[in-house]
Length: 319
Image (tube, rainbow, N blue to C red; front, side):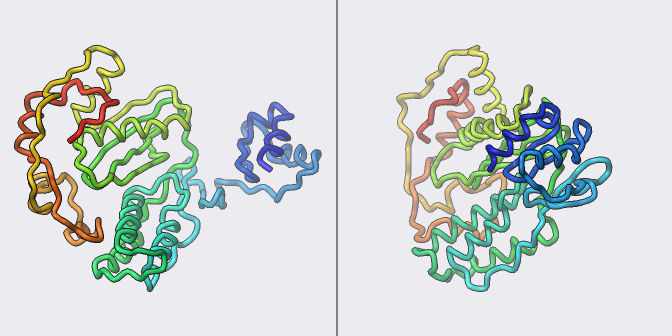
């Protein structure tokens, strides 16, 4: 159907320039071509369509509620999410999280919360229909629903155009995320949970900087400004793009000292930049065992001496 529709629209040059089709929905720019002319053109090839609706008056477009506000088009969630499932299982939680984030381009904190909930439920159950027994995990969906009723982040600006974009990237102990800003509006966001490894936070910030470039490519932007709060990541990427410095391999043959210690008592978790609620830290694995974590006194000393300066982006350092 998509191929047939695009072929028919392309037969008229003005209609091709003034329309944007997604499956069977057609957005018409009436500054280029009138909607009535598009309807007549489609009827000439045997394609009948419903009466056109003006987006600025408020309508449903691609599963979103779109309307005009202050000389611009804005969008939000079109349907209600529904109540939190009474019986929590992997199947019911995944279905609920699917309604929370769906296909929405901007979800903010909700995308990370839903992903963390799915990971925790998967770790707490062995099958799709096994009931969740963890007391703290049972309260987590309700807390998400309560906050979303006051602050639903699923919203944004619909009609954004331009060739310059600003890409905000960041990483924490739990997740990495990116937000694409065009003309002061966030048009798309992305987030990924971090694996349970001992990867240095700087490596996570480089990872999200590279991974999030895929978000920009789909918008065909000519100029992209990458925003990060890490001076180390800034130097790595700048040196990699300019080839200004060669590869530095300081301490490549040094032994990384590792000692067994309790996960909660280690200095690597003593002062995270963003702290999760205390009870949620228990749900990341079903059977928690003491872990082997890097001794941070040794790692901090090497970092202060410039250990990570000049480290290339394509090397995974074994920390």
